[in-house]
Image (tube, rainbow, N blue to C red; front, side, top):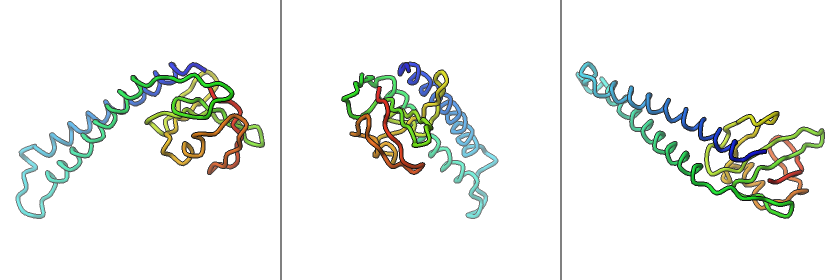
Length: 156
């Protein structure tokens, strides 16, 4: 699997999320500052609530910009069969019933799923429970995840 394609796809998804959040933050900012939303009494809080929303969405925009920059600058390690799982590892897990899971250990964007050929790859951060269970493990190790027990069959 081509990790550069994976990174391009996750950046694309993060970029789309960024654009959505920029639009939402701008709309909330406009609502907060619109003349019709000036408080007429202490119980009239629409403008205040909109300003809190705009602030939170602006923080989300900042976080997404950092995530995108992190992926753009992230070195892609080459893993061998003797390498432990680490950042930028593409890990294949196999359940006892033969079900395969493909996970990419990335610095951000946990939970994002991207298609690569016939595979769906799920992005996992090292801080997530699944990431913690995988970091430092080797091919052949068995890990217990919320979905059950899996063997690490490939690290690339």
